[in-house]
Length: 450
Image 1 (cartoon, rainbow, N blue to C red):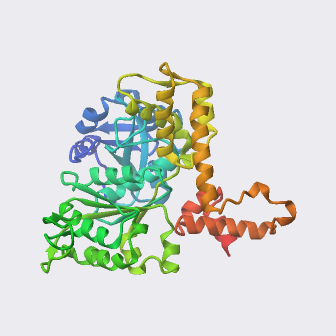
Image 2: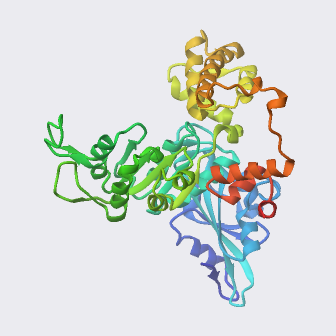
Image 3: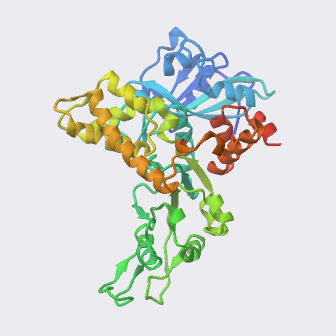
């Protein structure tokens, strides 16, 4: 809600108002000058010499031009454009280094509607790091920040979240971050890996069973939904849930009630649901492989987790973080040429594959410096494995073996339509995301789809 001030508000009065906020807050003029800060700001980010007439982008970013001119989203500019409060995720310079900060900008108008000042509220994002590997999520690239902004927004709600993205991209870490940023963080995050589970095993894992429910059930077992009561239930690879079990899962989500296998008694549980998949659930619904009603129940707030190929600007930070996590006894470094090799690689296995490569490299190297030849040796193993997987999925047909006469060519317009159709399918018809990936404006996308 916008703030309406009196016709002639005093600076002292506005400064006093800042102390009413439970987070760091600053008062900013329409020309970006910081006029006042509250005590929370001093404790979190340090003192600001107001007599030097500092501007917000100079203090928080070290820029000499506004954020939007420097290529970033600017909440002040957005508020000027919309005339209402705006919210943006930024990376700020702090006494501890670069940190992700959730910025909310509130415009202050007089009783005639004239814009006077802005109140900027700053809340540090505790689950992510832009400079070191001490937090759950690590990154500072634009695709990462777009994802993190959604994580920050949804964490404080109880909305069901569907995490979409390739295998190995870090969806489980994102689920942990959502849980840690929520009011349920003091309770458990319970994970069920759905891939490869039979109907009976899925039901037993999820709902539990009573003694004698089936052969081998020698004692009562508490189900994961009961363990998740008051906390978060994370269903990884939800697309692999057996179709016959999906109706029972739907009933659980809708009513919060369930029955352990072999029991006639109904139990109740309350949890926040997070699901993840690398599959195209929308297509599975069309093909009859996934229930439409369940799809709409779990797809309340979708978040796309970008692949490593889409966030190459984070590669150096991820390598540094992973090497520290792999070895606490020795500090490993990559040579520039070794890093260049990794930078040119596509990482079909994403961050999980990068972690495996670096783990392998630390074993193969005799020093704490990882050379190019070591990385190349590690990549040969992965490339052979990836080729085997590709051969199995394509029936061992190598596209390079096709003769020119066997190729089917289409006109440019058709090729473009096929490309956009594939993007829409992959990103679940998120047109904003599709336009970003395709490198065109949203207006151009709509025009091309007509």
